[in-house]
Image (cartoon, rainbow over all chains, first blue to last red; front, side):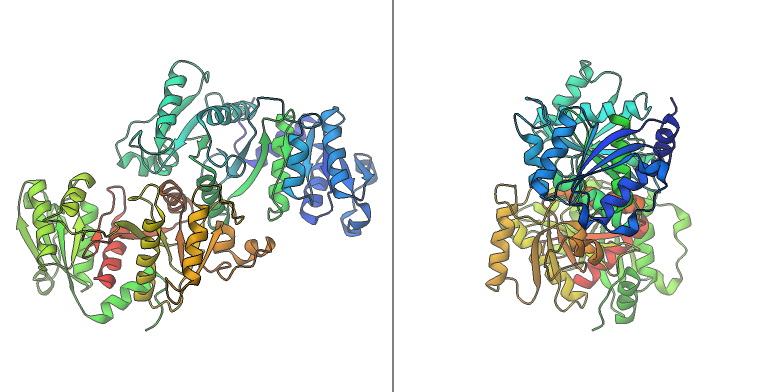
Length: 303
Length: 303
C-alpha cells in the first residue's frame, strides 16, 4: 500500500476502501461530535449508532441525503450513563467496531471501558492514548504517546505504547517506523528519570523485541524532527529529522508539546485509546469537529 | 516605562537607553556567537571583551566602523579553559557585567561558574535557566523556565524560578505578571508528580510571598495561552489565554515545548542563566545568531 502521510491521504484511503466501520457514539449531542460523525457517515467511512437523548440534537445538523440516512441510527436513551453503557455493550458484543465519546464525562466512559465484566480492556492490557499530529511544516504525520492517559509510564507501559504505535504505523503503510524516545537532551544519564528505561528499551530493541523498526533515544525534538538543527549537534542517529513516532517521557510533556503546536503551528490532531479490544475515540470537549473526525478516521483504519 | 512585548521592542529600548553593558565572552570563535556579539556592539548595547584564540576568528566578520571598534577588545588566550576562567574572573571582579559562552563545552563553563571560590553563584542561590520566547501568533513575549538546567525542580527551586521570572517581567515593564504552573491538566490531583508543589505554591502566593502577581495552576497550555480554546473548558482562571510566564513541571517538558515551536511556529528564543551574581548567556551551539543576540539583549536589561 501507499504510505499515508497526511489526514487527507487517510480520508482518501478510507473512502476508496468503501468499507463502513460501525461506530457506537455515547451521547452524541454536542455539535462537534455530531458534525464529526455526520461527516464520517457522509464520506462513506462509518455507519453510526447515535445513542443518547435525541431531543437535544439540533435540527440543522440533519441534512444528509436519504441514501446516506440509512447509515445513521438513533438509539434513544435519555440518561447519559445508560447511553454510555449501551454504547460499550454494543462494541463488546460486536454490534459495533468503534466506541466514541460524545457529551459524557471522561470518568464515566472510562469506568465503563474499565469494567472487568462488561468493559473493553482485556486483563493485563496496557491502556494508552496514541495520537497523530499533522503539522503543516513537517513532512508527514507524526504519531505520539501519551498526552492524556498514563501520567508517568513504567517501562512495561512504555513498551506497550511503542508496540501500539508500531502497529498503527504499519496500518498507515510505514515499512520501518522511526521511533524517538524524547527527553530534554540526547545525553543518556541514568540518574535522570526515564533515561534508564530508555536504555533498557534500546537494549530490547537490539535483541529484536520490536521487530523491523528503528528506535533511538534519548533524543531531543531537534534531533528527532529537523535534520538541519539536529545535524549541528553531531549526534549520529538513524532517526535524524525523520521520526514517525515520538514517545514522550510523560503526559505533561506530550500534552504541552501538542497543544503548543495546535495553537501556534496550525497542527491538527486525531487520537484514540489503545489497548482496548476495539479502538475508542475519546476526544476532549475542547477538540474541534475536524480533530474528532480525524480521530474517527484513525479508529477506522485500526478497527 | 512602556511594556516590552517583543524582541524588537527590547532592542529599541536598549538602543534608546544608550548604555553599553560590558560583556566577557569565553572563546568567542564560533560564527554565531561572534555575529551576535558584533551585532550587539554595533547597535550600541554592549562593550565586548572577546577572550580566546584570536587566530581562529574569521576576518570577514571584522567590518565594524572604527568608532565602534573601540568597544571591542580582544584578549588573546589560546587555551579554552584558561579563556573561560578569565571571562568568569572579569565578571566576578566587576570588570564585566555579563558572562557569555562561546565555543566552550557547557560542562567547562558551568564548572567555572559553580566554583565555590572563584565562581559566580552565591552560596544558597538556585541556578536556573529563564528564557523568553517570541511566538509570531502570541501577542507578547512568553517567559518560561526551565528547559535546561534543573531537571526535576524541588518546590524551593521552583519558587526561586518563579521569583527570577517575576523580576525579569518587572524589567520588561509588566506590572502584574501572569504566571501559569503548567501540567497536562487543570485538575489538581496531589498524587500526580508536582501537583502538590503547585498547590503549596498557590497557598504561598495567597499569603503574599510573591508580591503583586497572578499565579494559577495546574493549567494546561490551552488555558494558559488561548482564551478561546481555554474558555471551552469553563475553568475560571485569571491567567486565561494571557500568561506572561510558564513554569513547566520539568526540563523535558519545557525543552520539548520550545523546540517544537522553534521548528514549526517560527518562534525565536533568548535566554539566560539566573541565580548567578550577574546574568550569564549560555546558549547551545545549535542556537542561531539571532537567538544569541536576543539572549545578550535579555542579559543587558537585567545586568
